[in-house]
Amino acid sequence: CGGRIAAFPPPESTFRRQENVIAGNTCLYGATGGEVFLSGRVGERFGVRNAGCHAVIEGAGDHLGEYMTNGVIASLGKIGRNVAAGMSGGLLYVYDPEDKGLQMNPDNAKNIFRVVSAAGQEQLREMVERHRKFTGSDIAESILQDW
Image (cartoon, rainbow, N blue to C red):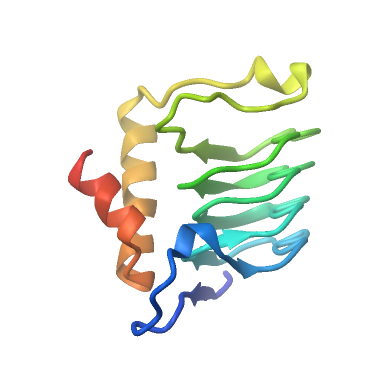
């Protein structure tokens, strides 16, 4: 159940998507299904209490995935502090090519793992491919080229 939202800048835009905000604060608050593909950064508290939506974004402000209970979020860009605070379920994938680590509550940091299982890799790759398909994301294309 649920629909699909894909948001991206017009093709003639000249700015870097991952450095500009495409959606504001508290998007997906309590979402129970569907999928969202946002080619750009999102504001603070993205995916708070997410209970089933699958989403791909290109960066976020603070409190990404706070109190999330289900669903999957993949961030392909820089994120703020307090990631996954109070998160009790679901999955949060964070692309960190500069290996800067996450600023997390210590209680949540114990739940951070590299994606090593075939099922996790397949799920993440499919999400990134769908993000590229629905938004034309350069970041998704670059990640897939280097997969």
